[in-house]
Length: 248
Image (cartoon, rainbow, N blue to C red; front, side):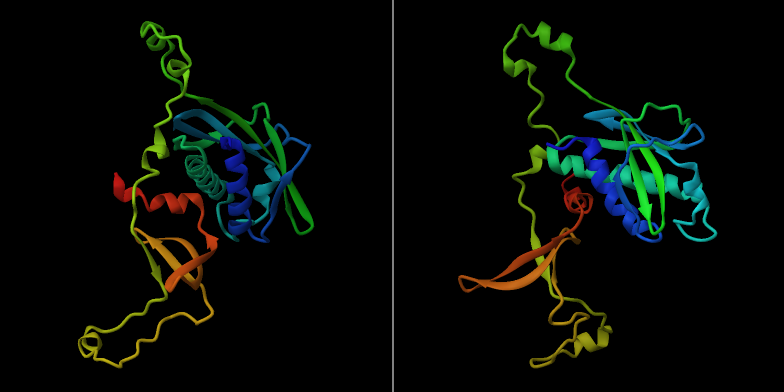
C-alpha cells in the first residue's frame, strides 16, 4: 500500500516532466536546499491530515522552466498544488484513504527534510526536498475504551471508508472511435449508405469513456465473436476518479 510521499513522488515525476521546459527528471539526491530556499506548504485534511512541504533551490526560479515572462514563484505554487492534488487522487485509488488539499502557501525554509531530490535538466540540476508532516487520523481512543471491547476488531481501522465503499458500484463504459462536428441540416439529411468521417486514423487508439471522462485507450479486438478493447494506456488515477463524481 503506497504512502502519500510515494504518491507525491510519482505525481511530481510525471507533472514536472510535462509542465517544465526541457522535460526535467526528478531523481533521488543527497544534498538539501540551503537556508535561502523557497518552501511551499500544502495543508491536507481527511484520513491523512497535516502539512506536506516542498523546499526548492532558490536558483530554480531564475530558470524560466515555466515559460518566459511568467511569475515563476507563483507558477511553482500552482504547479505544486496540482502535484499535491494528484498525489491525493493516487492515494485514494491505491489505498482508499481520502485526503484533500485545503491550502498551498509560501512558508519558511526551516523544515527538517524527509527526503531529498534533484531536478535534472539538460546541463543543469536543482536541489529539492520534501518534509512529510502528515499523520493518519484514527478513531477516538476514548470511544473505543468506553465500548467495552478490547478485541482486534475494535482497534482495526475503518475498512469500509473512502473508495472501498464504491468498488462494487457499476458504471457505464463506452468506446469512442472518434468524433466530428456536423451542422444540424446535414444531420437531418442522413440516409442509409451515408458515410461520416471521424477525426481519427484507423491506426489510432480508441477511447474508453466513463461519465464523459477518458479513463483508458486501446485497440479494438474480437473476443468470442464480440468486440472488445485491449487497453494500451490509462489516464492518471486523479482523472479516473473524476468519473465517479456522478455518484455523489
